[in-house]
Image 1 (cartoon, rainbow, N blue to C red):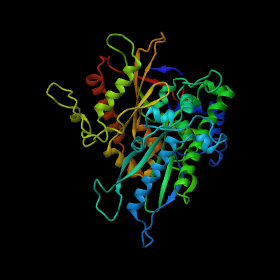
Image 2 (image 1 turned 90 degrees about the vertical axis):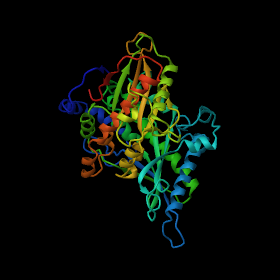
Image 3 (image 1 turned 180 degrees about the horizontal axis):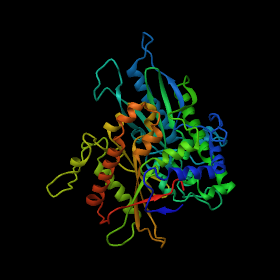
Length: 478
């Protein structure tokens, strides 16, 4: 896939790209056979309707003596179910429990846990519970009580990772033969796989970000690549998302039925429906970057190369600058950015209170580092549109070092953002027209905040003198 330093003006390439989709319809038809056997009905071109979210299971609420929902007990049960699922993913060997006919890759691991936990399955209770993210919603836990910090409902979100599939998706391992996903690192912020557990007054729900949809929306450069002309490559990569989905569903449903025998396994599509490939093309093309991602590259002032330690150090500097959830100064950004003593907080959007959801980054194969950024203010706004959207959060920033000039040394550090404009347009397209108008400026505010935090981290806290960042792009719909 070619790299570009210039792009079409917003939306100006749409007509050309739509024509390309018609030219590539045979490839797309092949690629879209990745949809699971229970996918919704095909259209005439063979495209299978998909949605970004999938409900994997639901559990009964807890009832009080009057046979009405006990909201506090139900909320606690949802947290207990999350812990049961996290415990399974962290501690058990999937093939031993579910069988080799279900699990085709490596063990699934719980993101945010230690290397010993992920590799040797020697996990502590504390790190397993700490790996579950609590994303705040605007609703109270108990609707009979006033909304307060203690009575604010949170959705439980977990990151599921699988080294085998992640290596393939990120271009570290071949898909087939020696063919890899080109520029695989550029997709890092679309991973790992996220699963949420949350409740209302009717049920406790277990939802996932659907891998079929993620591949369709976030890997369009692969779908339209010349590699799809190779039947073996097309077949192998098209089989990857449904296999990932089936394995996660099997794990979730096993763990939930074990936790509560009354749990009901499901496979229910949720969120906006994509019925035609043109709709995928349109939502990608109409985002400001004509891409789900924004990539900015940096080089050293001294002209030197970056080391793996530099990459992890820069990532940690971003986390520290952003502040860390659960610490005394969470949401406070005290880095001084002006000679008059002005701090980073003075230029971030009001009451955004950004923090990293984790004290350290998630690291995926290829030494791709992920910062999970969260603002309670913006999270609550997003969750006001429906808690099934929670697996689209938090906001992700990735760091990677690359050899862009091809001389064998890694002279470029790339910081990538999962573009909030694309996320709103693609994953929140089912929200009301009123909410779409109300949220129109929010993606820009979020991206602006994140870029300011990264800029401050790189300039003042990274310990490396860097040249000004240069935006780079990859053709997502050539």
